[in-house]
Length: 182
Image (cartoon, rainbow, N blue to C red):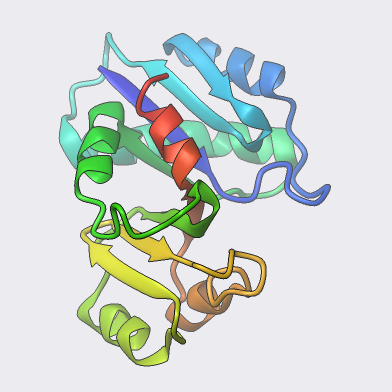
């Protein structure tokens, strides 16, 4: 089965610097196969076989437990990581509620979380996200249409994570599409 690890904040603005060659080698020591990194932000695709007995979300949590210490060792501090079965990216792409409503991949982002968005968090987003930004919650993903770009958006200011006290990692639409094919 093919999985993706999506660490938060790797190699962004000179922070949490990790060489992708070192990350790849470290994941291979865990027995992961066909390890491939994508761009310099820690996105990693890999095959899992062998001793893992868990399935679905339980296996994702198990993989997070194996990958997190490696990220911490390489970065020198704890790094949040989200894990998805690669086939899930196809579902995410197909379920984009803003398909056809954005001109550039730079306007469209997906936030990945380790747990479902709570009703309270969903209500907070509905009440606080300023127009023309739009968010749509689907389980453990939040689709973000940011017509003015990410830099000055609600998402870009980090308000979402601070207010909701949950770890997320964001990927732009081009990256989401690429990760589905690694």
